[in-house]
Image (cartoon, rainbow, N blue to C red; front, top):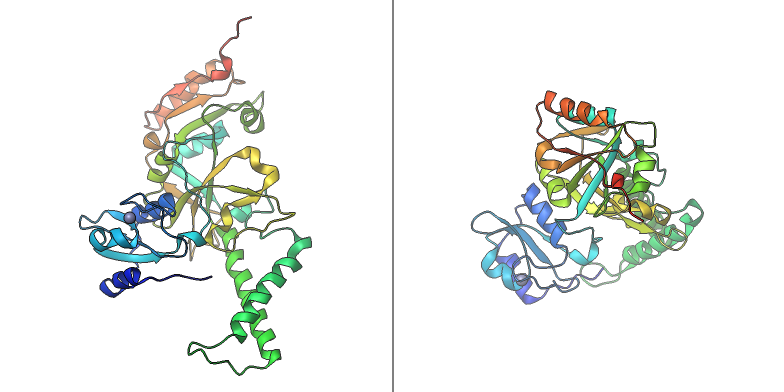
Length: 336
Ligand SMILES: [Zn+2]
């Protein structure tokens, strides 16, 4: 990975030392801007650093070197956008969560979103690097890189005196630690959403089949980010669907945003708590939030009886929330 530090980048590093202060607002700015400067709206050059920090009013910024000169007064951390998977998506993207009535009642009662851990989900490929039958290809790719790193010239440019056995041993140790770091992504707490401008009959049938009492909550990317704003390490991002016959999931923290191509119909957007140290033994995490701000409307399943709307509205207000309930668009009659 070649990082390209130009003199104008070095000037920023000389002026500002990284403070490492990461707020939820800055995390959102870094994710949503990806490789675009939030000040001049131009793309940040590949492998050049972007400067993530705060302006004089303590507002989060992700700046190119040129803008960082005047706009960044506190540097939190440099970021190298080209190395990250782009999970950004427009704030106005409409999101849905289809669920049965009991899950919705739990949400009202708990006054927030419950995020189960990836390892507790049905999909065995959560956090996976790829197909087991292709593991040797992945291993060999990284071993080759690590052997080069281990045997390459030292920091002073001189060749390193190391035996072939030690090179192999060290490369294999690095491979094991890479795998251990990414396996940790399976313990991330996740809230899964479906991105779609309108309702999906397929989602209704999947999550709220006929004879069940189902609802869908309608929200947006902006509302979901706001709901997660109390969690410094939370990100909202779109899932990438990969053909594991030819591709592998990324190794970084965005690993948890990679799924199999066979699930592409889910059009998933997820909120993930990226670092959750010390809580891994719990089955999930509850993130408290203002549900009335998170939820735009609650849509009644097209398969539920009409009287259910009255029950639903009553239950919502009994828990002290004011959230509108509407009928499904799918019930609109046709004409011939
Ligand atoms: Zn700029």
